[in-house]
Each structure stands twice: as structure tokens, then as C-alpha cells.
Image (cartoon, rainbow, N blue to C red; front, side, top):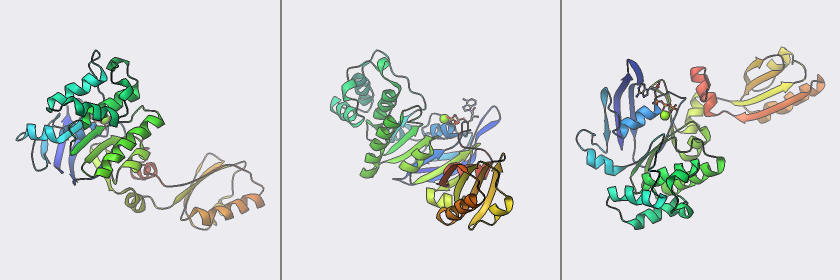
Length: 305
Ligand SMILES: Nc1ncnc2c1ncn2[C@@H]1O[C@H](COP(=O)(O)OP(=O)(O)OP(=O)(O)O)[C@@H](O)[C@H]1O
Ligand SMILES: [Mg+2]
């Protein structure tokens, strides 16, 4: 579906995208994940034909923007990182207007209105929509012509958890129909994990990791995590003798982070030791590794820093 080959894009000498290559197959749901300034928007906008690479090539369905702009415009549904609507048009009129660009009738606007769950707002001026409703309308516009390729730049940023879920469900319904390829940028790891089969982690204009979540975690971030806060410091030799311990680190005197092969193996022994040493566990958190751990392991920084 998309073939990006050795693409570089610089702004005043700063490489926002640095010699990046990426191949996306038809039907894939791909999340572009990365911190602020990683180059996500720049990359997506080059696929959308809104920005031009300085070097390298981008082909969508084998066609480039230079040769086939009309064809590619018909192929894509896009929502940008920020959307402004015409204030004095209603939601219904806005959908009608964008639909008319594709030669679609008002019937399609009503279908989309229902799909995005904004039926009740059809007659409201766009200026009066809430943030979440605006994001839904932006998605609705992207879906009008039933595009085989959907590019969404942070579609759920700023939404409350409910609205985010609703938007996810719309995208999951489309996924079930298997006619859409999705590229989505996000800061939310849960979003990438829930929606996408493939996760591409971008940092400083380059791809740091690319693959299915489980494969990424297996290859880069082995183990499970126990985070422990204790009333008194735990002796180092007790920690080192714990079964299944891969590594540990200390924060201050009473906070410890253990990486273990298997929480269920290590935790009971750890609790026994605490009891016998009459050290109180103020807080214990057990979890599997996440994409954030992976990002920290690769860059020393957190994804959302
Ligand atoms: N038009 C521009 N002029 C100058 N610099 C730019 C321009 N567009 C992007 N940049 C720079 O390129 C880098 C990548 O920006 P980009 O918007 O692609 O990041 P992003 O990953 O989308 O970040 P965010 O998560 O904040 O949206 C940033 O350092 C940004 O300042
Ligand atoms: Mg961006």
C-alpha cells in the first residue's frame, strides 16, 4: 500500500525525518508512536502529499504525488493534528460540503453522522461542538468517501476516556470490514496496543523499532516488573538472592524496581523475606513490561517526557 524509501526532510538544516524507509501492506493497522517532535506529523503529511520530501521517494499503491495527485486524493481519508471547521456551517452541512468534493450525496452524510454518533448534533453549528465532538467530526470527514487508506494524526488527543473508547470502536468496526489500511499517530500506548497490529516507534526522525507489540516486547524488554516501596531499606544481599531476578535498581533509600523472569515465582519469596525482616511493604506494583519500558531501554528517555 505504501512504500517509503530513504526519505529525508529537514527544516533549516534540522532533520525532522532522517533517511527513513517503511513499507506498509494493504489492510495493516499501523501506529506511529513517539515523543513530541519525533517526526510523526512530518512523515504522515508527506504520505498525504501536504509536504514534500527533500530526498527519497514515497509511493502509495505504486503511485507518487507528482504523477497522480487526483488518484491519491481519492484514495485517502485524512484528519490532521488540528482541525478548524467553518464556524457558521452546521455539522450536517459540513459533511455535505466535504461529501460534495467527492460527488457524494446527502445520504452518505447521514450515514457518516450515524457512524460517528453525532446524529443529535447534525443541526448544531460546528463552533458549538465540544473538543471530543470536533474530533469525531474530523474522523467523519475522513471516512466520507470510504477511503481504503486512512491517516489519522493524533485522533484522540485530549479526549476523555469514554470518547476515546467510542472512537476506537469506530476504527475497530472498520478493521472488521477489512477494507481499510490505517496509519495512526498517537502518544497513547494503550491506543497503539488496542488498535494496531503493528507498532512503529519513531524518535528523532528515525525508526527505533517496528513490529507486533508482543514481538517488540520479547526482543527488547525481557521480564516483568515489581516496584516496591518499603518502610526500611532492604539489605542488598537479600535482594540479590531472590529467585528469577534479572536486574534491580534503587530509587532513594526505600524504592526498588526489580526485573524478574516471572512475578509469581519471585513475589511470594519477596513477601516472606520482608516479613522475616519485619520490613513493611508500603506499596507494591506488579506489571508486565510496556512500550514505555521498551522506549526507556532504547533511549534512556520516557515516551511521554
Ligand atoms: N514547518 C516546520 N518548520 C520548522 N520546523 C518544523 C516544521 N515542522 C516540523 N518541524 C520540526 O520537525 C520536528 C518534527 O516535528 P513533527 O511535527 O513531525 O513531530 P511530531 O512527532 O508530530 O510531534 P508531536 O507529537 O508534538 O505532534 C520538530 O522538531 C519540529 O519542530
Ligand atoms: Mg504531530
